[in-house]
Image 1 (cartoon, one colour):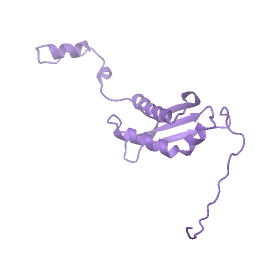
Image 2: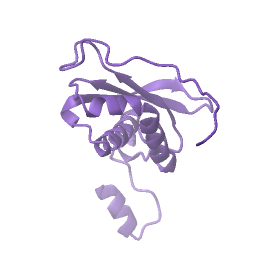
Image 3: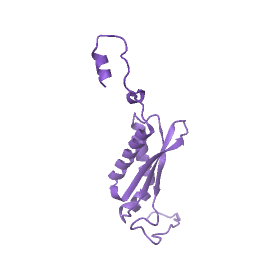
Image 4: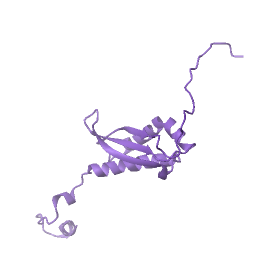
Length: 149
């Protein structure tokens, strides 16, 4: 840092000898930086849905290359405590959570050169407080045309 400041304020035009390691002056983001940024986006989105931070674990990992050739990243959310009100709503709205994360990532200048591959949710039978029996059955809706009375 001193080298950079002295270079700005010196009258000499030539370059000063570099005493810092080359990677300490880089402006590039590392994969770890990008993973942390995605993690904060996911955490913020889930907080807004009133998901308690002590009931989930979030991880972000590289997931290969996206369809446009950009490096891809995936978010992983593990449910560690089952909230009978919040958790079913969260799982019903996985596509909404994914859409919100994509909107924030797409609006970010920092992440315009990465691809968000998606978010994965996991709730196992060992999740604290999870249901032990099936809580509802899918049903078939049959539309019967009729007159509106």
